[in-house]
Length: 116
Image 1 (cartoon, rainbow, N blue to C red):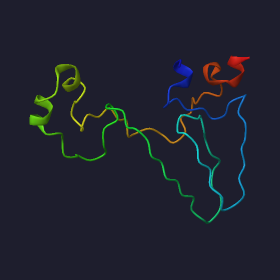
Image 2 (image 1 turned 180 degrees about the vertical axis):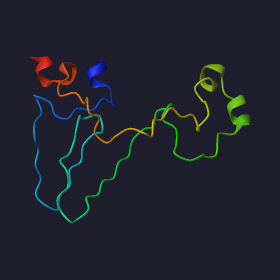
Image 3 (image 1 turned 90 degrees about the horizontal axis):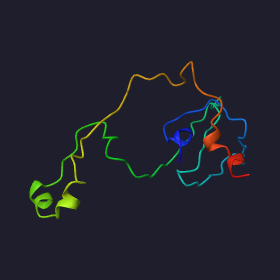
Image 4 (image 1 turned 120 degrees about the horizontal axis):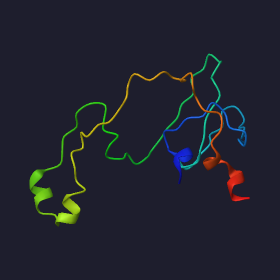
């Protein structure tokens, strides 16, 4: 995957996007690796979403969580214990606008046309 497909790279729109619509009250189930978005909700009703996904180590929790048992980590082979860093590792920017002024509108690396 190239930089255009970085999971936190956002696009206002994309020239090769495809709209998939659902009837009111229906649900869509997708793999979180699918590039996806949504339109603003102008209704008086809330939309709900359940997301279940793997959290990379650098995307730490919002609040402190209980860390792994150091004795358990010490019992692991070195090539495993090196991967068991703190569960509280964070690299989060909280002060980002919802829609940055310079949001991109195209990314050739995520275009379905790249396979043509």
